[in-house]
Length: 405
Length: 167
Image (cartoon, rainbow over all chains, first blue to last red; front, side, top):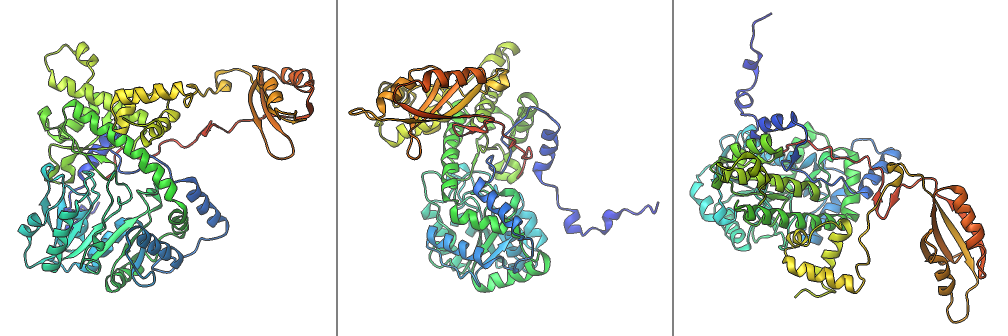
């Protein structure tokens, strides 16, 4: 025994990074059986068969080698076609698109390529759990901007402006939003675009949920006046095509940014897996129908979930994107964490406390409605029973358990 | 009011087709409609026989029942005035016959017959189907295994393998 504490050798930035707030909750939930999980940030669909089949075919044909660092040109061309067809955005597949290992890698590359230690990265919260840590790992300083239910969890230019300093460099956005399901209204986007241009901010826009919108159209940040070259657009196949485990994402932006990101990618990752790239070509080429079917299905579940929460007296604003509902549970007198933990223990339904995504998420819980209708209906019944019990603490246990909202 | 041929009616049908046991209130919740309106749409579509029947897909084999089914290609001499319809009707009236379809190609009707034994089905074909006056010939194919029925994979290994909580 040397008696050494090897933790002392770990880079303090890493050592001092708190583990994800979701982690503890995950450990608790995984030890229980019979849990219906609304805590999952991925589709409940498996990847459409035509996509899986094309990957199997590619393996049979021997596509098992490295690809170019930027990814197969055929795939980049498909991505460029997809962005142009859907949004009218034009990117040169040879210089302005990079295929990455999930959109997470694209985000990491963008931050590392752009952030000089000490630069500030402005992040609206509640937000995806990795934005802050990824910023810190890149040497940047995360500066959070709270959003709230009164603005439909949209970030406004005036709120961003208040936190800007001479070191502010990057604005990191994610709309449609995880965890709230919020999408940005046009007016708010335009004001943000003006602010970014006026204050010389670079926008990293994580648009991984862009295909999952309901009754509205998604407006990419890069499509706003003056933002095309100022924006690194990040997307991937995970959510729209139910391909989370394939780890395939991409970044699109001006040639200088993409070249810089490619440099890091080439030395650290080489390339995204060719199997996933082959599957992605098929998904982008022929997957529109599959996506539409899944979106239709999510929309039905979304309405059911939002209506049910409101009927239980847990106010839930209407999320117009992603597959999350974000009800306010503060009227129960519990914090989001207490609510989630007791709901899990007492009724075996897993949701994620909103506080795990930032202080503005406190008092809320994130419910992913990417679950089968049967599971959703049962989970909502259990939540209603749980909320009913919280509201009528004096009622006899037997009767309380029978009461259904 | 939602029209019978409108988007709402189509959505109600799609939802019901995948699960006929959903209550109108549940369907209404999913589609953003009023329960009364869904009830009315369903009633009207039942009356018009757009909705024909609420069906349960049963895996009888799993229940323990022996079932034998056969797909029979039937060549028919069409009749004046009524074409294939008259002979099709004589065939589909038999309760043993589950499905009858008129086909293009080398034969005319395809008939799905169900019974409890090979012998029973064979006997039905020999004594009832082939014996029909306008039936020229039959070819019987016994079903060995069903993989997928009405869009449903009967033994699906694709269970939910996701972790319980992910960011």
